Amino acid sequence: MQIERPKIQLYKVRSFGDKFSDTFDFLKENSKLWLKGCLYLLLPLSLLQAFSLNYLTSIFSDMAVNEAVNIGDSLVVKLIISYVSYFIFILIGSILLAAFTYAMMRHYHENDERLRGVTLKDLKPKIIKAAKRSLIMGLTLGTIVLLLYAVFGLIVYLTEWWGILLLLVLLVVVAIVPLSLAYPIYIFEDNQTVFNSLRQSIRLTAHHFWAILGFLLVLNILANVIQGCFMLPWYIMFLVKALFVVSDNENPIVNSSIFSFALYLFAVIQTFGMYLSMSLNTIGLGYQYGSLAEEMDDVSVDEDIQRFEEMSAKSKEIDNFEDLV
Image (cartoon, rainbow, N blue to C red; front, side, top):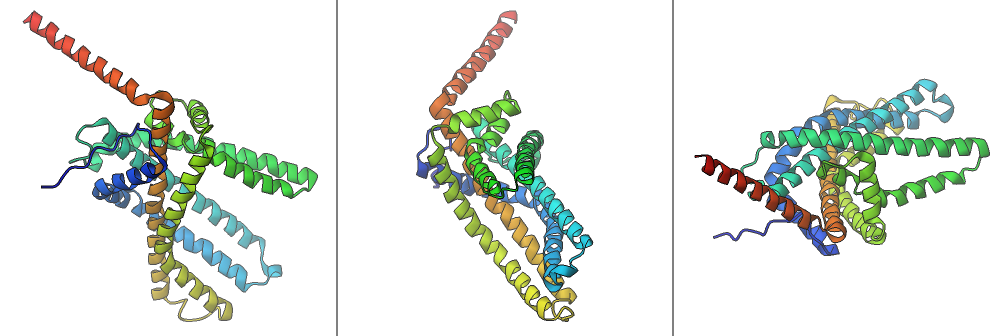
């Protein structure tokens, strides 16, 4: 007889190790639904994104073949367009991943039966709702980053002090921690606005900066190791193509349809693997938020009170109905 694991509570104070164990336990317990959701939502996107990735790398190959003086404006325009299109694909993929993952976590938290027997169709309303909120938060954070780049770019243009770009990079790195919980806060808490979520994220992380930074670093190292395993076949193919193209642009091996299809297939695997590895960060941040929210705001106590009030209201409705009968 298999012993059932205790339910993973969202709002629970966690140690550094507990955050990792709960992240992996959640994936292990719900691996079938998680993998199925990724296949349905992210594999089709990966099929398109792989074209964008290979097109981007082909432009770099063309630049390597041509001398710097021969790089025309058209090639630069193509490079910019390919960068923008690839960024859009990653943005869409990140939104879909966050929406699906947090919809799973929310349904798991709100139901005593966890995710037993739950299908993607059952999660569809939560996924759509989470996707809308994820899009709004993503656009907000993206706008903030673009404004920062514009301001710092203007300063560089006026002062010609390129050291300001280093300050920009440091500022973005430092800002990652205070704003890291904005996504789970905005998706898990329906009553929060975008800017309230940003403020709450800053408040929750204010006294835990180094602990969260260490947690994110370890998570990213693990995610990068997993992503590297998926990326390695494509990267080897890309290096082979680059070496052949530099030595002989008309090489029949790298220009064959078989080689091109293999490169595309490995690009799909690399892209899909990237999203799978990003799930670690997404789930980990969800449990990081739950730990800090419980530690500082006692969210589970408020939920218990609300649940008790709802049960009392239902009991009164039943009593009133019996009196009428």
